[in-house]
Amino acid sequence: MSRRERGRLLSGKKKSDPGSESRACPKCGSSSLADEKKGFNVRRSLMGAVRFGAPGMLAGLLGRNDTIKKCLSCGHHWQDMK
Image (cartoon, rainbow, N blue to C red; front, side, top):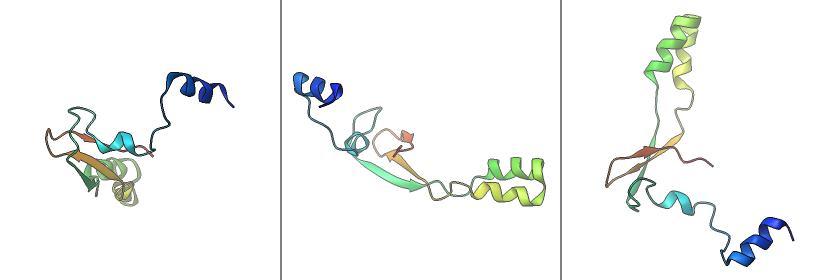
């Protein structure tokens, strides 16, 4: 048994779900959340074009399928780290 597990047993805390932290807004604590895709990043595309020419515009496509959580109560946005 590791030191961390012993400490958890002594404190009475159970091991939490891996996704339990992402089920509430970190700012207001609301549970009404929505998932959105990042999409095309125009700023990254323009910076890629300045540095590398026309092929650099493809840099705007990096991360387009990543999801962002949005709180429907307060409007706070954050990226859920996995």
